[in-house]
Image: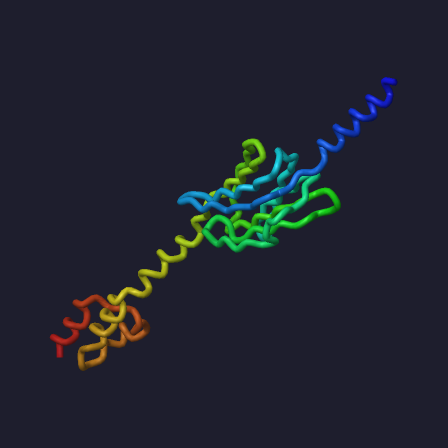
Length: 177
């Protein structure tokens, strides 16, 4: 008589350990990072993997189906470019978080919530600083001032007419005729 009880107990445990549902995937942008929340109907077993080219975080959720989560979300906030969710085999749901740069990430769980924190990249701000000096108005004015005297510079200055000679050079030539 004990055998049917054990079989019933195992069947109940297998049904309870069955799959969960991924109910929502929410990106929450912040000033220094983006928090991607994966909300489920129960605590889930998962693995994470970081890939490069393009940089991505992959979260595989074991024994989970996707319920009402859009297949792709554009984020584009400086930390996360986009998020995709799809089935990956018969019993696995996969969430792929495409990163804006190659950065480390943190993962934590709180009950049925999995949170992936991705720091923002600073790549966009770096190229702007070298561009500013080349567009300054002082360069055209210096060239115009160097070429404004009516007589030509001496032959020693002619190999570099695009370089701005010092203001004392043209005035010294002008005063020596």
